[in-house]
Every structure is written in C-alpha cells, then in structure tokens.
Image 1: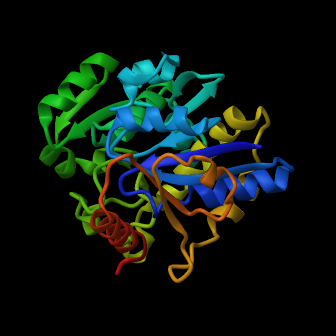
Image 2: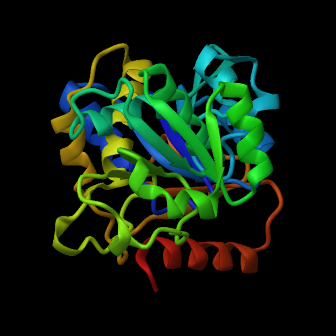
Length: 306
C-alpha cells in the first residue's frame, strides 16, 4: 500500500484525490490519495516524512516555500523556481514541476503548433513561471506580464523573453495568438468583449466562468491543465503512463458536502493509513479545538461556496 496527498491552503477544493484515486483503481494499484492542510512549506516536508507519503502534489501557497526543505530539485523545478510534485525515494525527497506538461498538453488540444506563436502570460508566480518555461521550450514567442512589473522583468530576463506592464498587455491583447492567465483566483484584468476572434485563452484556475459572448475566443478551463499535469504526475507515482480519458472520469466526481470526512491527528499517523475515507487531513502538533472548527468551516466555505 502506498499513500499520496496534495498539500495546499485552502485544499479541500482540490480535485486531485478524485483524479488519482480513480486512476489508481482503474490501473489496479492499491494506492490511496488524500488532501493535507498545513501552514508552511517546512510543515509540508515534515508531514511527508512523518506520514511516509510516497508522493505528493503541492499547490498554492507552497510551491516556492517547500524549495529549501527538499533534498534535490529536478531541472524543471530549478529553472522554474517552484515545485508542484514531490517524490519520496526512501526518505530522500525530490521536487519536480509538471506544470509545463499541463500547459502544453492543454493547449495542444486547440493549437496544432506552438512554434513561433505569440503568447502572453499573465502572472509571474509559480504557475506563470511554469507556463513561460513550457512555452519557451516549445518554441513560442513569449511575453510575460505581472501586476508587479519588476517581478515580470526579473523573470523575463532570466528566461530571455519579453515583458510588459500589465495595463499595456491588456491594451495590446489582440496582438497575441495565445494568452495564459496565471493570476490569483478572482483577478481577471481583461475585458473579454474587446478580445479579437481567434485568441486561445488558457486559465490556470479551474472552474472560473468567463463571459465569452458569441464564442469569440477559445477558452480552455484550468481543468485541462490539471489533467495533463496529473498525467505526468501519475507516471512519477506509478512508473506507468496515464490515460487522459480515465483521469477525466475521476475529475468529474464531486465531493458531497454533507458527507465530507475531515480528520485532525497529532501523532497517530496510522489513523490516516487505516482509513481510506479521509477527504481532508489536518495535521498539526499544536492547535485548539476552536481553531479546528474555524479551519474546517473555512475549507468548506471555499470548496462548496457557503
């Protein structure tokens, strides 16, 4: 039996457990994947060791915070400066970044050839850097923009691509073939009605509904990014290639807010390992019962919208 988890804050909304547990079951692996909520990047790594997790995925806000606590980084993780996958090799933790596979895989469904395509990436965080890295390595002509122009400049200079002030990027959106939106949830600087016909727009956030009157532009939801990233993670976790259509069936499964199972453990790690119905694990050595209730309420509010 092997155990896996996704770490984030918030994290109950993550669809990764549905994707991987369905994929594991379909492929005949006796593996279990859940969610873990912690406060810091250091706690992510400590928890992986404490629970002896075979592999993990890392989402916001820990993709960069885990870096100094790992034993080794892959080439992609070093270049991007962020990690979204950790593999535990008998206690030796290696960080990887599979987001470029997610970006390129999602775009490949709508764009036959990325070489020389003009691309604008909004956001210079972990997802934005991964998108920029993946697109450049696919031969695209990439421009990076960010709400903080100095951060966009620094990363663009590191990758050898162009950068723009975000207001200029919005004003000139029609000069690009592809746009990748990798800003924080709820931030959308574009005026969709001003976008030219033919633009392909990929959103890193899944489930964000965007007005696209008369289908003027091609919108790719972040679920496609998630699936192709997950397919690469599946290979790291199992040594076998995943089928996108199988992972997609897992993606379509939803948590029931009335029966979601959240557990808090301090030291008894075997409670998780003996219970395959845990949807979210709160793992900490020092937290009050009042704080536990508040954390659970916040997670449910974010995941289910109440």
